Amino acid sequence: MTIGTTSSTPALDALLADLRELVECESPSSDLGAVERSADLVARLGTERLGVAPERIVIGGVHHLRWRFGDARAAGTVLVLAHHDTVWPVGTLERAPFTVTGGVLRGPGCFDMLAGLTMALHAIAGLADPAGGDPAGHR
Image (cartoon, rainbow, N blue to C red; front, side, top):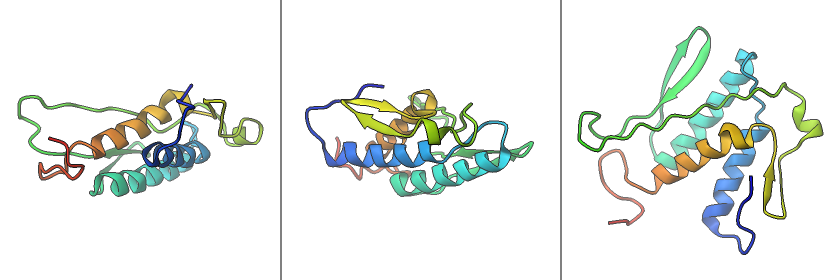
């Protein structure tokens, strides 16, 4: 994945720090303990960014997280869906660590789906709080 290389901003630095944590929390789909640790991390990062903890739903030992904001029946409602597990076995980081070099981001799971998940959390955080206010000052 290629990212801008001209300059760093606090927002980009925060996004990359969150992404690094997610990539370095190995979460192969077949390892339910690893997926649970990943869910714990996503819950923590999401709570920090969104200001509210998610609902945790466990189905067949697999941990899912759900945040709800506003009225789900209202016009213009949007569903954001992502996953935090990867196909990479534990230990992959030893040979393929998280790196950002020359504007290129590398690491197991960074492209599918961890960068998208991280960007979604940061984008939602910039929109509105659960009560419908606008903590980011956007109008």
